[in-house]
Image (cartoon, rainbow, N blue to C red):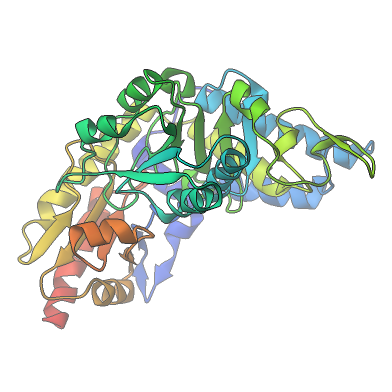
Amino acid sequence: MSATKNILDTHKDFPTLKRMINGKPLVYFDNGATAQKPQLVIDRINDYYQNENANIHRGVHTLSQDATSAYEEARRKIQVLINAPLEEEVIFTKGTTDGINLIANGFSRGFLNSGDEVIISEMEHHSNIVPWQMACEYTGATLKVAPMNDEGELIFEAFEALLSAKTKLVAITHVSNTLGTINPAKDIVRVAHAKGIPVLFDGAQSVQHMAIDVQDLDCEFYVFGGHKMFGPTGIGVLYGKKEWLDKLPPYQGGGDMIKTVSFEKTTYNDLPYKFEAGTPNIAGGIGLGAAVDYLNTIDWNEVHTHEQGLLKYATEQILQIEGIKIIGTAKNKAGVLSFVHDKAHHYDIGTILDQLGIAIRTGHHCTEPLMHRCKITGTARASFAFYNTKEEIDVFIAALKRALKMLL
């Protein structure tokens, strides 16, 4: 499908953005937590439940065949979107967290031993910290943390120095959910591969901002969720190179992930079904396919230009407010603006902004170690998507000034 949409026209495609909050038009700047859904996705999910509702892969009847076809077509759409070499390298999961846990579970059962090491970074989401802590506790391996500088950028030389014969995996965020930092993914893969180390990227915050090409990145694993890329909640994707997915043990047991079962022995199914036990989120998968259809109508270069323009404009405007400090000032950033005020608490700012129709995020954003590194308890975070506008930023800045007047 060719790109046809003007980015400035996309706002009208998302029904939630038409809501009034406390008598004011909604300004939705919480896209880092979840993105809104276009009418196309909502309609496709409704259509499945109204006209195709059936379980998949097992039924010979028409509804099951229709649902199976739509679900597997969604897998093919994702394969094309991320340029995966093989359809079976696209595994449906519950989301980014589920995908990371799948890999951590597999590594802890077959590839990690006492004395081995896993490397993450200081800017990771809890979803890319806790599963590796659990894997290391189970196996006796050690979790190593690559540092970042005060701007929120990975200190690459320090990261590279951590790589050794003991390193069994690098698991790192592609884009920080708190800082907006875009990590140098290809350089990370290059130096890791030079030592024969596989790489996993947490892509939860990248798939909505940029085109992802897993062959170009050459990473072993790439995980992301549907809800941040304008699709449903409860559905996500793990991309893995076939050679690795074949080696990893199944994550869960049950229906659909087997070839044969006896009380003595079970043989497992081929990829991708080996990792997809039980009845999946069928409506979620089909809805995610519809989200891909929508993304195929936009131009990623336009998305980048527009979102960078929003980030630059919002940054310039917010720095004019006395007492504001931005947390995360990397040179290469996605559309995330985290900030603190020297006298007003981030929670109070967010609460008053909500009364004025502005939706932002407050708190530690599931990055408590990063907050400790920055010596703060949390931030207020405005995160942008391609459907946001400069006019909304003007409303946000005016509301923020008003909120600070009320608080100080």
